[in-house]
Amino acid sequence: MIESMIEKLSTSDLILLALVIGHKDPALQISEYDRTHVGEVISTGNWWGADMLRLIKRSDQGHRTMLSICFPTYVSALEAWEKSPDGVVT
Image 1: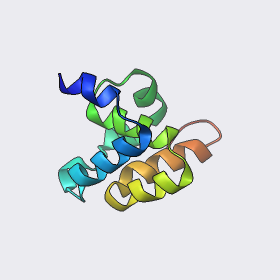
Image 2: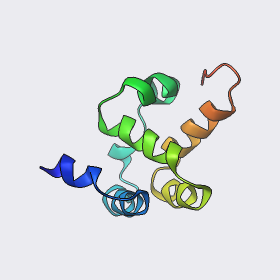
Image 3: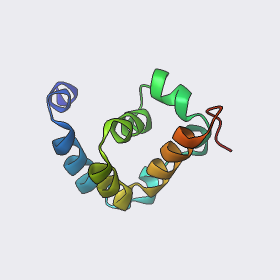
Image 4: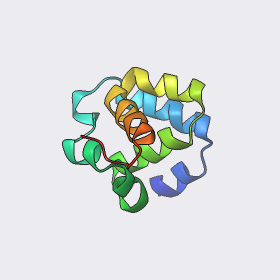
């Protein structure tokens, strides 16, 4: 039920929802596995962290900046992956 509702939200609405839910909760920061396997997680992951990385990836710079307030480890991991020539983040 909730998943079908979330699928209908716009990127802006999803970002606002993520900011409200995630408000710097340490439990919602990126795991070591997700941080070092960003490409794999984005393409095959079916958990919350994978959804967060996909949301950040499709966000424009303004929305990405907003997301970095509550999810700095996700944003920095994705940006490191995007800048990595071989897609490997250490």
